[in-house]
Image (tube, rainbow, N blue to C red; front, side, top):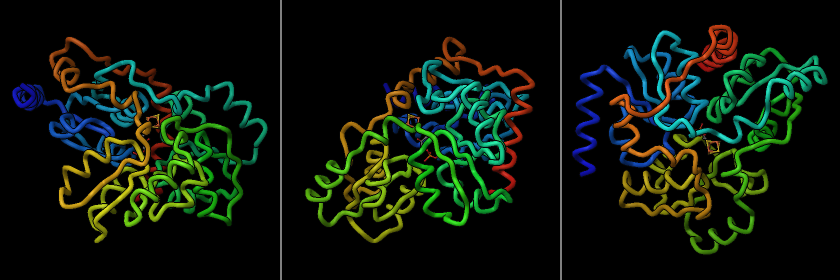
Length: 304
Ligand code: 13P
Ligand code: SF4
């Protein structure tokens, strides 16, 4: 049944000239039918390049908004309208305006996990894999980084020559991972390397053998000669790596490291979205697209 559904999706997307993008946190059956799989930066770049008339973004709302901002003439769809990112919605325009008032001489750098509206107030956008390179290349020395203080802390440590202001915010899925859980996982798998996402808390990131974005973690695990890895990011990566490298062992750091927003989209939702019976078309005001595009273009320019 699953195979038939996937074949129907592949047939329909070809017939209708639809491009399907999937974030790595999607389930394996969705990755199998996607034209492109990636982390936030890879998806943003792909969104800028695709020439399909329609794009289905399997991920969360801010990702679909990013695709729309970069491809305003295309019709962009989110298969499950309720798939949001709690971190992206932590700050609103009023709160950020107040922060900008308080830190007038700071450049505002936004993690890509922010709403399109919020991006209109930011100077540069970054992803977990591009942040260090981009912030280093910025002319500005004073950075107000929003909204993830864990990723912010990680960046701050890599760029001591600049001054940072961080605010309290972050990813509830990654921030949940505790030092105790890391100690337990390391004791259970003493030969495994610990790979962590920088959205995790500083004290657990400090225990890692490697820190990186989702695709960076996946390629590190593939290329490294070690045979065992503890995966400190959303648990779908444990499954994807296990399928990709069956000769290696991958262990979840915490059984609670599950992003329910990422998991709400099913393969059936993708089919319904292609058929036009479900899903939401992402519509943004022209002025929001224009203003939000500035910080994303700046990310793409500095990240080249
Ligand atoms: P990356 O895909 O950039 O690693 O970000 C992880 C994440 O939490 C996306 O929402
Ligand atoms: Fe947002 Fe965290 Fe889920 Fe990514 S994993 S979509 S940052 S809540």
